[in-house]
Image (cartoon, rainbow, N blue to C red):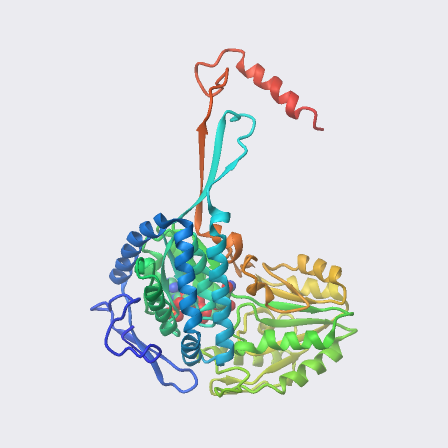
Length: 512
Ligand code: NDP
């Protein structure tokens, strides 16, 4: 970072960031509510990114050699630092992303919780263990462990600039990797703050977490830098570009992409609770949530009541940048064009606006759309704004069919009066995560994996799967004693195969 109001630094490249490239130039990040410059940052070019990755390789050796226990202590120091300076970071998130401070505090709290879980569970999930050697290697000890990949590249979006990248960073670090993080060009100050905090909290391995800043080209350079894995969170179109760049070096990828998440409201649902959750799921963070609710399918039995409850709540919302605001401006001015297009398309296709439907500068009014055809952009594409379509369906089965008729499948929600019925619908929803009688809760449970299906991506962050995502499984066998007959030797006797066949028949042949 060259200059950031968030840290008070005005002098030059600071700890936690990479020295500016002499040829790369700089860029500014701005407060979306006021246009005020939040910070000026170097555009790191390929040489600067490669240098960061080279430093990370050295740090990765030291970090891995520390072992689970020592890493856990340092991850605890990091989360302690974040917790103590929570308000400073929340203020920076508020200014650079535009979301209310209270939402920023919630986001940071979630990230801290994930850091704690990842640190505490890494050894048990990844550490060395003995497994059964099986019949043919009965005289061997079989060892399994999950080893770090070395350096993990993390490319993150701007909508949850702490929580989202931390879903990769925390788990990659806990697994023993060093991380080079490229934040979105809209939230570089938050990214730089996170890396500075690491250096302050973990001074003996400062390069285990570094940040490189810049635009898409900087991210592309990270893809080509030969990292052990590239964890990408962002849109599907950019994800394709990232995969293509990573393919050049056969760099494995984790893809956390967009969503078009649906909520099902069944006949016997608590309609008021469903409406409350739908409004939060759709409108919080100005709808810029990958697991935000964008579509609701309500059964005919509850549809009209549900719409009324939603509209009442939505009309009480107040977008703005003051302390009482329900949500802030769109972080990225260009996103209002997408929202406008979806609104116009929905209305042109015969949909009606129950409330909202206007865009004023960077602020989109909280909007509820009814009777929007399933073929329209507002139903099929990610809107990423404070809008919600509500569609009447005959029953929950039709709701599920429609919910699953999407190229994306990230999260989702089911409201049902029966826990068993809700669980059954949730299991059959084509998505990586589903909450029953709530929204978004799966993201706050560190033990649960997070990730999508279809065009929402592949791979998992969070939980044991998230730890393993940043490792390679290592298998070792150790011979303990010779067998009378060694089947894997040219010296085996002529009758060895027949003897093996007899043993196999004894052990497996009785199964029909
Ligand atoms: P983008 O896809 O536009 O950008 C994501 C990141 O990729 C940014 O850091 C961006 O940098 C970088 N990037 C852009 N071009 C390239 C390139 N050629 N090579 C490498 N990196 C590149 O997404 P947004 O930032 O707009 O984020 C919103 C999207 O993220 C939504 O679709 C949302 O659903 C999704 N998302 C998914 C989540 C999940 O967990 N599944 C969580 C949160 C968001 P720059 O900004 O500098 O261009």
